[in-house]
Structure formats: structure tokens, C-alpha cells
Length: 394
Image (cartoon, rainbow, N blue to C red):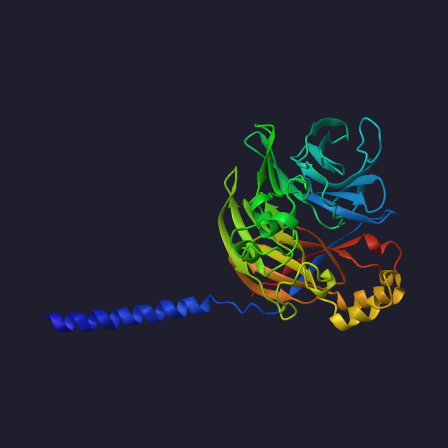
């Protein structure tokens, strides 16, 4: 074969290879607005009088840790919904905590609860709810307290004989030392609202959750605190960080000490077509993100649709107490509806505009399950009905 024929054949095969690789790349592209399907595959009913929420699930024992939404008790419930133990944990006793909101299983033989206080300490209990340890919390100054029945701000796991706590804490800095009115967008460079506790070091390391590629930080633009949400899967060592403002989710690997290998995922939805607002603007006029859940290989970014500005101004013009108007609450229920964006790996794979059942996403599990707490219905105590939902994969 002469040289010219060899070059022609080489170019021919290169063209074929390029064409095949191009088709392969195209086949992996996903329509970000693809409406995904989720299905209910199981449910559990907890027959207790008070309204409860799920704090955590332990697969090894097939047990749920639950808490009364407005009461003092925590509950251990098995996978069939049967009550195993009920303890009044909130209080002033030696085996109580003055005020609690969150809790987790801590290995197979302990439980851990976060105290609502100026320091946000952690209290560790054995399975008989006897207090065995108190861990100094990550809070150093009181900036804000956000209350949600369906969010957990920390994750725990045990590895190599060491205990870990990874989470977010909006009170991790002294507001007197970091004044946004003076430093503006530099706030995002200074403040670290993530934290990591390692029992072998018996200390807390603070982590920045404001990515350098998050648009407000990158442009040094102050748009409000916008404290990022953190979700972590200790099995896969994957973390997801979601600022409420903007259109970006950041995913990371965890190397035992830090969040590494950052990947920015662009988020989009037909109901999220607004520019980042001025911080002085009413927040309900913007479709802010409210949570991120990790379930298996996926992340679920949750937001609520914005109230139209003319509707808001109509009620706002009635006076400062407009939010007490029953009609205003009806307007909120009508216009502020949840929407969902699903991410896998480093890309958005679709959206979900409505859950397959009426309710609120309570918890994501490592096996790909989302647990949805059913909305109030007409059947007695069905407010303690929980659905297990999963993505229908093609």
C-alpha cells in the first residue's frame, strides 16, 4: 500500500470513529425538562395520636426514628409501623434535652440529637435512651433559626472505629465579626457554614459551602445570606450543596477530611426563569430552593413557585398585617406549590411537577427511596401515613 492510500484510509477510519463517538455522546444527553415518573411501592402507617415526622431510618435493624412534630416525645418504630419505644426526650432531666428538633441513629447501638440552643450541642444516647455523651456543637453566634419538620441539617456515620458528623450550621460565625452591610459579597468568602466532627480529633472543622463558582460569590455580589443546604450519603461518600438562590447544585466527594472534586450542575425548570433578585425584594416573589434530598444515586432539589407580584402587591397594600389575612394564606397555598428537579451524577436528568401522592418529601434513603409524609386527609390518623416512592427508570 502506498503512502497516499494509507493516509486516505486513516482519514476514513478516523471519520468513522469520530462519527461513532459523536453519536455515543449524543445518546447520553438528557432533556433537563424531561418529566420523570415516580411510583409508590410501599407505605407504613404509625398508629399514634400525635402528628409525627421521620428523623432517620436504619436499614440494618429496619427501624425508623421519629419525633412528634409539636410534642416532646421521640419514637422507635419498626418497618411495619409498629411502635417499639416512646420516650419523652425534651425536658430538664438528666436523660433529657431542653429543646430538640433533629436526631439520627448513631451506629447500631446509639442515637444522637441536636439541641436547639446557642451552641447547638449534640447529645448521644444508648438504645435505652440513657445519655452517655455530650458533644460541643458548631454554633458560635446566634444569627438565625430555621425550623422545618422535614429537614435534617446533619448526617452521622461510624467508620474505622471513629464517629463522624457532617452538617450545616447557619450559626457557625459571630454576626458581629461579619457585617454584610460593610463587606457585601465578601461575606461568601468569609463565612463557613459547613462543619465536620471527627471523634478521634474531638474537634470541629468548618467548611465553606459557598462554592467559588456560585455566581453571587464569583461576581462578588451580595444577594442575602442564602445559607446553602447540605445533603450527604455516607455510603457513597457523596455530598450535595444547594444554595437557595441561583440555579446551581454542587456535588462533591468526601475524602475523610474535606469535600473535594467539586462539580457544578446547572439547574433549570420552566417555573424558574427569574434572574437572581435584589436582597430587598420580597422572597416569596422568587422561586427559592427549600431543600435537597439524596436518594441513592440521585439528588432531589426542591423549590416553591413564586407568587405573582401583582397578587402580592394587592395584599401588601392592605397594611403591615396582610399576612394574617386568611385570604392571603389561601393565595400562598394556590401559588406557592412545590416543584422538583432531579440530578444524577453531574447533570440534571429531568423534573417532577407533582408527587404521585399528596404530601411532603420527608426523607431520602440510600436504596433510592423517597419517603413522603401523606397530606392530611379524611381518615382518622392518616396524617401518620408515610409512602415509599421511587423513580421509574427507563
